[in-house]
Length: 139
Image (cartoon, rainbow, N blue to C red; front, top):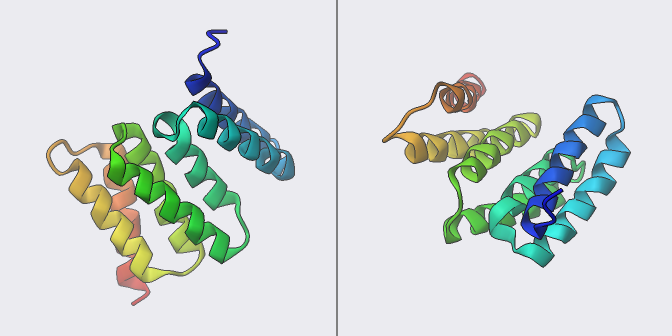
């Protein structure tokens, strides 16, 4: 293992996905707390947005979800790697759809479209379309 602290938060986050896929949602939540703590110590710009977005997706309390998403969005505004933008917007769209929030689904879809406009990607196009269609069909 490399031992570089900034990689540890991301590694833990991927382990979270495995735990969740195995049905261990509570364990996944615990591991996300550890991943976030690691990211805060190492610096949030590398993996913090991904971890915060996953935390928001697994969070049941809507107010806490929104707070996590706001922190994540703030980090992206400060400057971040493309993958953090992709990961965040995808999960923000999913959270908005799960919460029946048309405005946020549309806003995050538009933000992702703006971010990828110069270099569109099929993967992000799927999520842009998902957010837009949800907002259109439920308005």
